[in-house]
Amino acid sequence: MSWEAEEEVAGKAWDGRLFRRLLRYAGPHRWLFIKSFMVLASLFALDLVGPWIWQASLDGPVQDALSSPEGTDTAPFIHDLLMLVAVYVGILLLQTWLRYFEVATLILTGQSVIHDLRRHIYSHISSLDLAWFDRRPTGALVTRVSSDVENLAELFTAGVVTLAFDMIRVVVVLALLFTIHAPLALVVTLMTPILILISLMFRGGARRAHRTVRAELARLNGYLAEVLQGIAVVQLFGREAHVGARFGEHLARYFAANKRTILLFALFFPIMSLAVYLIQGATLRQGVISIAGDELTIGAFLRFWLYLTLVVQPIRNLGERYNVLQSAFASAERVFEVLDTTSNLPTPSKPSPLGPEGIAPKVQFQNVSFGYLKDHPVLEKVDFEILPGQTVALVGATGAGKSTIVNLLLRFYDPSEGQVQVGERELTQVDLSDWRGRIGLVLQDDFLFAGTVRENILMDRSGIDEATLLLALKASGADRVVQNLAGGLDAEVAERGATFSTGERQLLAIARALAGQPDLVILDEATASVDSETEARIEQATGLLLQGRSALVVAHRLSTIQRADVILVLDGGRIIERGTHDELLAAKGAYARLHALQFELEA
Image (cartoon, rainbow, N blue to C red):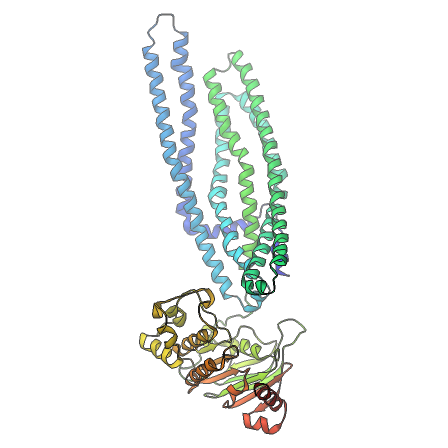
């Protein structure tokens, strides 16, 4: 399934399975939910007391004052009325205080659950294999971790707790209405299903509308992330208008999806209000008849009317609550689609030990074939080995499979056929973090994270003391780069190391590799994008890096690999030649032609 199809995951309007999975994240915070429920219960109790005070006032001191003979002292009636007013004002103040706790507790509850969920989804995404990331734009993944997860916060703040309590509120108040006046309560009870029916009619459309909104937002973010990453190329080729038009198309689809949602609920709320007015009108008509027939006092009717608001308001809010639920379920589908993804690089339950650190194991590629896409092989029947302390170089045209061998050795992917062995063990049976921790990697364009220089070299690895760090900087030649920075090792690094030149990033990457004291070094075209002077500095640093270590070197410039123990020449995913520099030149084959062509061009 393509990532675009995954963005529009289908599901039911109410998905009990999704809801139960979400509740697992709510479990550790059950006391916050209980606290929220207690605050809502206290507010509900005060809501019930208020109408009772109104009835007590009208049917008590007000009625007594109106029905008393002319000239009667009204002071006792006023005193009783003022006492009831004081109690009512006190209830209002207490409700205001509790409203603060209601909002604060509900938001804290939702954010606590979302905090755990976001940590879980990020941890899961970071553990997935590169093949999964290859099929998904960065922006779409950012949407999953940020806005989709944040959307679920509403489920716990304005959704589950309040919706559950609203149901309790409706049942309790309907029961109280029957204690006030049964015929009037029967009218309300018979007409209430109209409101519920209207909500049910709109729920399917709401779920589909929200799912489309989330999908279009992911596509919009995906395209935006791609454009921002390549903004220099966009400006260089004057593609601003074209890119702007494409962005406008994505934005238009997102706007259209939002407009459908808005129109749906713009239709829902007026219809719901009309139904509420019908219920209120029927209640008012029956109430007037009952008061005229002395079956109901004015105070009791006012209490009934205020209680009716407590019934109608939650049902009217059901549309808004349902809106929250639909949006949350649409996001939950997408979040759990990610969480249900399993890595194609399974970790062994009992990984085989690699042996003591400091001793490079023998590495073997045995009959390895691999393709990023099915039926499009990149490597075919590749066999070679890297002996302890040996440097093996890979050369060949672009697309020959050099970087793919590096990816397989780092176990970013597993071979389609054959196997990669480390020591006497298959790489799939080795602890992956232990294996990668013994590798020093220097790429053609190394990645520097926003942070400090020190953080970019240490990379959260334990066991690297200050002396080892300084030695790595000096050996790599990166100490001169650091000395020119205002903050030294604690100088801030811009995103992707934008404030450093390519050569400076390479020297810092070599320092990073040296600091980890690796057993195996991988150099992936480390000097391909630098000038000759910087290349000389990098070659001097890599010479120190490779001393006494096994190494796999992917070479663009053949001058950098003349001292390699074995050179492998790749073409079309196959090894067509192997040997030392002198042996391959003497053979006058593909390597000799590449060598002659390159040095001829340089001359």
